[in-house]
Structure formats: C-alpha cells, structure tokens
Image (cartoon, rainbow, N blue to C red; front, side, top):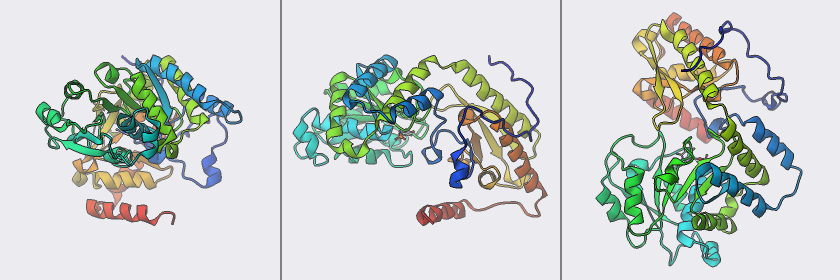
Length: 418
Ligand SMILES: *Cc1c(COP(=O)(O)O)cnc(C)c1O
C-alpha cells in the first residue's frame, strides 16, 4: 500500500520552484505554461525527461561519435532490458514500426532496401486486426504503407477469430502487426499468443507496437519477433523509439536506415538519451512514483467529492500498465456544464490545465497524474473548483454541442500557423 502523503499545502499555494532547473524557456518564447494531466502526449511535448537523460543529451551534443558503435551500445542495453537478442534506437515508435515492416520485406538485401517503398517482387502484405487499426496522432496503418506494404484488415472491429488471422496470412505476407494500446477495441480481439501461433505456422514474423507499454519483456516473451516502444513516454527519454527482438530482424530493421529510414533519422542525442532513460528505468523507485501519483488522485477525488453533479472514481489503466487515473463524471444538468466544456475551460484558464478528454462524449474525462511536477496537483484541484463554482453561478448551463466543438477544433488545426 502506498503511504499517505504529508499534509497537503493549501490549494492556492504556488508550485514550489525547481532550483535544479534552468529558467523556463516557455516564458521567453511566449508559450503558455500548461499543466499536463492528460498523459503522455506528443502534442504536449510527451513527458518529463528524467535527469539522467537530460545530462546524457547535454554531454554528447558537442562531441562526435561513431554512430554504429553507439547503436551497438544501445543494442546491449536494450537487449538487457527487453530480453531480446538485440535492439536499436529509432526516431520514434512509429518510425520503428515502419522500419520493422521494411525489414520483413527487404531483409538485409541492400539493393532491395534502396528500392523501397517500391515493393516489386517482395512480400508486401501486413495482416492487422481491424480492432487494432487505431490512430495515435496519425493512423497506424499509414506506418505500414510508408514502407511500401499493404495493410490487410483481419476480422471485424469488435471480433476476430484465429481462422480469420490464419486465412489472412497468405504467401505474400511479410509480417503481422499487433498493437497494444488503450486506443484498440478492448474486447473480442485475439491474444498475442494466438496471433503468433498463426503467423509462426508459416514463418511470418510478428511485430508488436508497444509504444506506451511499461512491460519491456512480456511481448517478446509471449511470441513477438520484434517489439517497438517510445523512449519519450513512460521511460522519460527524449523523443526517440526503441526496436528490440530477434537479432537477424533487428539487424535488417537497422539497415533500413540506409533507405527509407533516412527521413526518420535519430541523432546521437536521441540515442544517448534513450540509453540513459532505459538505465534510469532499471533503478527507478517505481513504488515511490506510484505513491506520488496516488496522492494526487486522492487529493483530486477529495476536492471533487462534495460537488453537485460530479462523481470521481480511480480507474486502472486499460492495458494493465501500473498506473491509475481519476475518471471525472460530469452530469451537465446538476453541474451546469458539460464535461467537454469543463475540459475546454480548464485548458483556456490560468494556468492552462489539459485533461485527458478523448472519450469525453461518454460523459467523463480523466486526470492522469503521471506527468506532474511537484505541487501542480494542487493547482489542478484549485482550477477544477474554480470552474465548477463559475458554472454553478452562471445564468445558463454551459453546453456547447459536441459537433460544434469538433468543428472548432478542426478549424483551429487548419489555421496553423495563424
Ligand atoms: C504513441 C504511440 C505510437 C507512436 O509513438 P511515437 O514514438 O510517438 O512515434 C504508436 N503506437 C501507439 C499505440 C502509441 O500509443
């Protein structure tokens, strides 16, 4: 059990300064000092990079290194942490998926590597469960097509059978892609073991997209030939990706850097940062991290507990990562505001608080404590109370239609850089 936190400071206390940190560059650039309770989001700068990785990045930036040697070192660290035979650092998990698919197509044939994404004469089909065809800011199936391959959807969105997977793995199958994510359909999907059995029956490798999964060993142990991770999510590394698994396939994926991988280049800073983040992960006090997160959840639940129209419950991560979030149900009639208007008000406030709202039409958003700086949890609690007070005092309920909200967001996306 996690220990109770020390007495919380008053809700309006400012966040304590971070004396070991350089001045916040956001002020100089005129950027809003957002507080991130949405999780690890590319659009918000991913995660808090751990001090070990910050130091490693700073120490290599001015030096030259032999990149193949640096990636050899990375391979050793990745192998130790994942249980795979080898590994390397990529630009991102998404890049890792594309390089892994390309490896399954072109292998270590240097001429074929230069021909991609023209896949003439190569195996070019990639079966993937339809319920796994998700987006994470871009469609996962586009990461397949980028290599010159063709995704082959398997089953229906909410159900799949082993015979459907077996039937989709034909003579042109290069690899099967298996996605582990809270984005996938949460029921009716085949297990990794079932997919691996079908693929390995005809010698086709299984690539796992495990971008956000804390489990560094499990997917390779359960039958994946390659597993791809993000370095900038739970690991707290700089933006990078990790590919791990069977040595021959890892080598083939690495060699794609001489082809389509060139446009997905990771630099020396990404490599040393990812190595440092992996080494720090081995030593991290995971229990203490969880206790801190739990204290924030308890604080928010208490702050919201007596509010009209609000129900807050602590929920586990849907894919089994060792983390919890606070699900905040908002009854628009009693709270006098919709959950999405509350989310938008928090995002527009001072300081901006960005909540996890991608399922908000279900009547709730979530607060994710995994990317908080010390003290920010109290600011979040205060901002929630202020916005709920404001809604309660307003003349009319605050209720934008979801369609209108979506339209506004799309308009804003298309208006960049204005
Ligand atoms: C974040 C994510 C990705 C993309 O990872 P990057 O390292 O940002 O490219 C891919 N798949 C899933 C399931 C993700 O959550």
